[in-house]
Length: 436
Image (cartoon, rainbow, N blue to C red):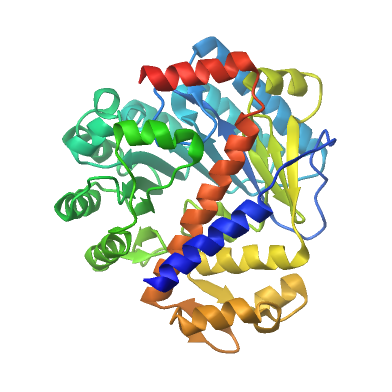
């Protein structure tokens, strides 16, 4: 449809315009501002194999290199604590943060010593979710997110995951072993994969519902220029032809047992838990600002995006020298910050107008009148009154498009940062991608 194409092209233009990195002279992020809540993100850029569709900063796992990195990550954590930050939430992403469980536990323990943490989320792969690992990690992690991507063996082979993580049936059995170990067990799945059939998609939905997970995230396929060639060779040529229909199928098939927490995250209804207690993948919804630790991490503070170096070697040199490894930044105008918050809140299904006014000192209806009028004309809102904006079914898909293109734009930012890698690290990354 015309509106879908218009939103896609508009978001591509805006992300290209706004997400433009410039070198930064800063050696640490700015200190916290009074009465603001921040989240802490820690990035572990090591994987046992490299998926062709992934644009995150990642390198093949080498134990010695990874152990040194975890030590540097903890050093950087202490640097951030010295600035006065007091985080309640930690999200550990990657890469594969569970490549060294003992190092991960030490890192979380330090975070608890430095900050008043109340919740920790972590990412992992199916082969790491053994019962032994789950029992070791469950005292430290409230929400474990497992990257499944698909239960279909054909798709797993095309994604180069079958040999490493096993068949869909193997993954399902692995999840069953750990389903009661964490307060929240989330599984990530990708839909609209090249060649994916409606039957394959619905089987993924059915298997996900049988997995024992109490949260399920269905991401649309996203990539960036740096991985598009590798993805075409393994998965095939991406297309958006089926995206809307597949999204509607997912929502319809999930609605009896799960409810939407964001545009693409589904939580199992649990009457014992208030809705606001759910922990979801997109920490950017609950926290307007965050600090990133580790090579390839981002920080978003007071309208500025800061990027840590993607070079593990340079990261080590900077942190061991007593400073954070910032390499670039992008700055956003006040209106751009409002647009970002507008999109993030709607991605979380509801924009509270009083909260927006409190944050920006102006009414969202006046500040973003053209955007709201365009979305209203497209039938995007179920509720648009003095208190809130909420999304219709049509609006949820339009937000999916926006977020898909936003994350593709962020992947392009990663490409910019990765381009500054020393030749030795670039060659290593290229060699490992080609080898798979």
